[in-house]
Image (cartoon, rainbow, N blue to C red; front, side, top):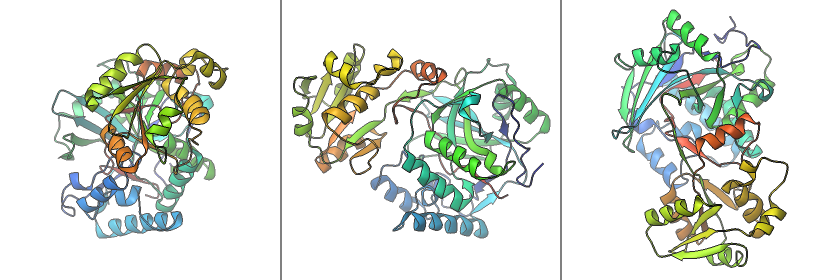
Amino acid sequence: MNTAGHPPATPRRGLELTPFRGLRYDPDRVGSLAAVTSPPYDVVVRPDGLHHLESADPHNIVRLILPQAGTPSARNEQAADTLRRWLSEGVLTADPEPGLYVYEQSDGGGMLQRGLIGALRVSDPAEGVVLPHEDVMPHVVADRAALMRATCANLEPLLLTYRGNGSTAAATVAIERTAEQPPLLSTTTEDGYSHRLWAITDPAALAGVQEDLAQYQALIADGHHRWATYRRLRAEHPSPSAWDYGLVLLVDTARYPLRVRAIHRLLHGLPVSDALSALEGSFRVRRLEKPLTEALQALADVACAGNAFLLAGDGAFHLVDRPDPDLLARTVPTGHPTAWRTLDATVLHATLLEHVWRIPEDSPAHIAYIHDTVATVEKAERDGSTAVLMHPVREEVVRDLARQGVTMPRKSTSFGPKPASGLVLRALDL
């Protein structure tokens, strides 16, 4: 056993989920548990959502995951100082013994999701244990790595899924039995979701869960940049160490299916009129004088037959579909499976962004990736920009491509519900 409380990482295949001493808010030191939570860092709509969260409670987790200062180094040092102060003041405290955490989310309308939060051994891609399905942006990985180095902590879990063997599996049994007990915490966030958390600390139960999970591989549902960050930081530190592991939420989608939604694009500085004029002769474009819900349904209807997008930002919606086959043949890279070449995200990035609109996909000054549909449209209309609304990809397509080792264009999917940030953190120096 090393000083981080983790066994040395071993080369065996399969998921290796390890107990840890979680850092959690002391409910007596904050206004409410709901007020200190946040969506994952890349889901927070900035600056509106950021300011809203900062004002919700002076101890909101957004002050750690999205610190605000003049330079990147100042931001990271501010987060580290804030974390140290909250620990010294008792705002955040470490649980007395290591455990795996059962995490439950429900929406009151029939959606119930449960999973396990733990420290997962960080594996190499060649091992095939954790399957990514999207490319990452190097500058985002560098930013997250600098923040984790400064704070020496995993501030929020990424979301992984696996396909279990049913209700009798040891992990499932442990989760269900634990959820019958009084929770460590229970809160309802302003989006209407209820959150509950329990700890599994019994050695026999933990051993059964770990043995069960060791036979599976997992798909990254949300958190590709954080997983790439874990891999970078693990490579920087001699093994064995706490950096061999990263904080994850692991959900069995055979038991608790996730929802798959699209991630939309906001093209800064590109008026809708310019975006549409560039499409003449290459795509079919139809103006829809309909509300958002009906426009999205129209997008879903035509998406069954081929690539389709919904453009917004000028007070109306424009349905874009039927791309010119010759244009696709010239612009979409070959050497990939048909399922990849025909993805909406592939056509958007390879054809529209690169060749038609000539917008660099990795430049925050030119493009933003936003999960919330209404917020994307509102920001486009306010800024005179173009919103590109996407239709979601089916989960089976994502998983099949991942198993082939094929990554999708960045920000292609949004699995959910995502874990709330701020319910449990992992300090690497405990």
